[in-house]
Image (tube, rainbow, N blue to C red; front, side):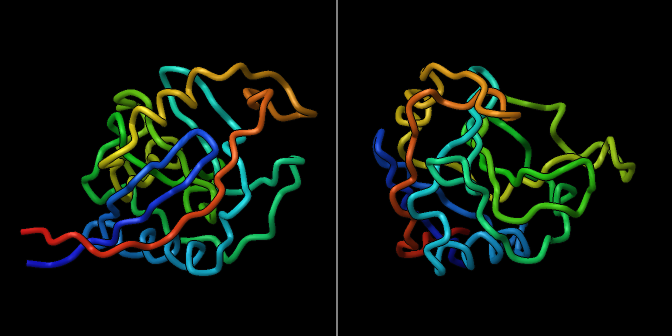
Length: 174
């Protein structure tokens, strides 16, 4: 038996509870938890919402100011976890090991985001947890109207605020 961290993400649309997978994604989980402990995500927004794909947050203020992040981490997309509906994964640039604070929650099974090889195009996006409560809130966020904000696309026209993220008790796993 081991324990997996649970985080509560309070948004202005409701509560999302996420179980992280510290066994299969130890680097990514610890990175995410370090941002949670620093209150980094508090008062940030879901800045990219694409229905039937994903909602992305963890890096911008409601005024679309980009927050300063910690060091980029090693991509753990090869961990066997899949980009399925309700999974949380790290956002990154075209550089394989470029994830920092931004994450996304999958709205659908996005197999094309999974690890398929060690090439830059095939490496994939590291899943590190699963929404265990609040997918209805995630689905509500996915319905908001979006537009362009400067060079950013798919930005909600009304801010979807991550009010706070906190670590809860760990869940026991077998």
